[in-house]
Image (tube, rainbow, N blue to C red; front, side, top):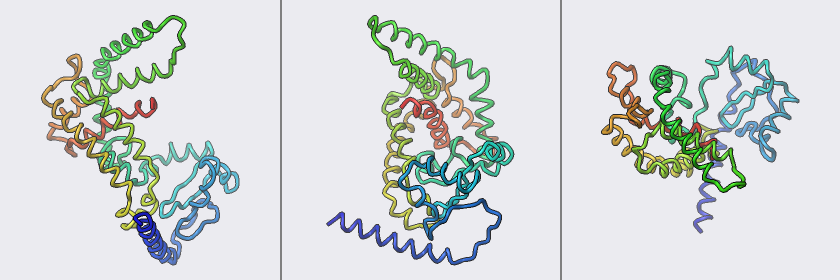
Amino acid sequence: MEIQFTTFLLLSSFIFLLIKLWKKTKSPAKHQNLPPSPPGLPIIGHLHHLFGELPHRVLGRLTKTFGPVLLLNLGEVSAVVISSREAAIEVLKHQDLACADRPESIGLKIMWYDYTDIAFSPYNDYWRQMRKICIIELLSAKNVKSFGSIRQDEVSGLLKSLQSLPSGEAVNLTEKIFAFMSAVTCRAAFGKVLRDRETLIALMKRASTMAGWFELADLFPSSKLLHLISWNKFKLLSMRRKLDAILDVFLEEHKLKQSGEFGGEDIVDVLIRMQKNKELEFPITNDNIKAVVFVSAMSFLCISC
């Protein structure tokens, strides 16, 4: 009975959405000189072309038919597909500012603290401020050198683990190297003060996967109804609360410690120090720090999954 009611609710909502969006399609097109597109359908645009095959194969087949620059309407969201070297150079080099922003996503908005990290932040003054902090503070020669002791310690641990293996036993070097890279990254970001580090890493891996879930509301951003009934949204918010419970304690412990591993500053220490800078155009909040740390840790953790 519960399943039938849920099905009825979703079907009714979808029909209501179709009626609402169909009215929007009646307005005359205002855009000209757009790239070629395959035949589309009302409401869903070109979504039906992506069903049944791997996306990269579908896009490859479409670009062979319609050219190296292709426009797809995915619901209300427009996407331009680039499949030639010349077009890629134009987009990534000459028109990079026009293409710097990403489409909005419920998953990214929730898990990356309203886009206040660096990787998914819109191209704006806040992003430029955080980029400057990263270049001057986090990636400076002095700070990178301070992580040398962490790298040496992890290399020593890696060699000891290899030497302890029985003679003649096969070794998965890929797994060992990824584990080494993840350990260095996590220690540079977190230090050793986090008691629940393994739990946090597991939650981060899960959260990263959840943020990439397909969400119909992302394709129809104007529909408040789809955002309201999004079940993924509730799951993401629940995961966010679990992460916050650990990260908030983690930040407080770092503020009390006031020094990184081996006496130097780790990434969190640097961001906490910058948080006290009253001259910043955009004051750094705890959520901003958590977002940056999240992305820093995931840069290697996602690869090693």
